Amino acid sequence: MTNTTTKTTKATETSTFQLAAQKLDAMSKERQGWEIEEFARSNQRLYKILQGCYEILLNLSGKAKQLALFDEHLTALGQKFQSTTPLATKIVRAVFATERRRAHTYSAVLRRAKKDRVDLSKLPDWISEMGGVEEIRLGESKPQAESQQQRQVRQTTFAVSVLENKRSLAKVKSPTNAPDAENGFVLLLGVVSNDGSISVADFAYDPNGTLCKKALANYGKKIEEDKGRKTLDAEKAAAEQRDDDALAAAVATPKSDGTANETFVLDQAA
Image 1 (cartoon, rainbow, N blue to C red):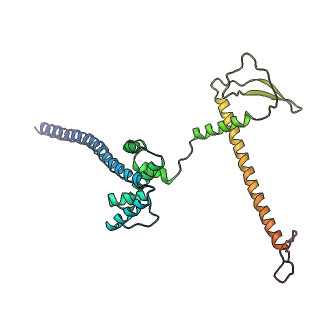
Image 2 (image 1 turned 180 degrees about the vertical axis):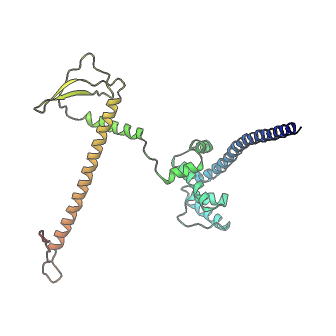
Image 3 (image 1 turned 90 degrees about the horizontal axis):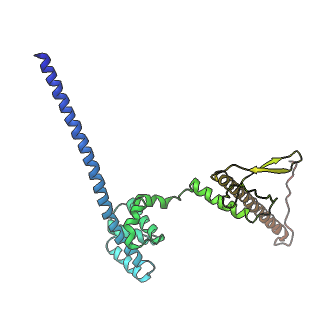
């Protein structure tokens, strides 16, 4: 009897646990659906309000008299702002009457939209496509880093423009089995002789043009770095020359009593 009772109790406990687990799982799914629907619905309402703010921003921008009247209206409503406060921020504060951080976020969205010339009717869709108001704010506060692919494309394009205008070192007749060119370029394998001369042996095996693309990007990177170093050297030399010219001018200019300025020379051996 005791064993039967124990088994029944355990079965009941197990059944209760399973029901609770199932209920918990069902509620979790229900919560996920609620969040998705409510957040989406809430965001769309927010974007509609921002669309109205954007319309005011577009209508008032560049209109001095209307802006002056608008400022008077905000002052009458008890809004406080400085002369440097962006119009978008004034509008947002008047509509949302919210804390500074949220006002800054919504203002950033409106200013970015105006900068990108987003059509008024497409603003809600534009905000969604951009990942939401917070993503737009983050994009405004820090520049987007150049991706590796973008950098490689830029360096390759730069390399092509340099090489196309570069004087040819040598010309080799292309055989019938020459590989397809990548941007008009192929890779050659050269053998360096003892005297330093280079003999072209064959084309590099590069069926997809991967090696050629990488070589062009690396060449473009090297040219950029060399150009950057030359620019820095030129700027440094120009700065030193300006200092020398200023010193020479100061020495050449006589004092008010007609005597020449003293020239101080550093002892190089010191």
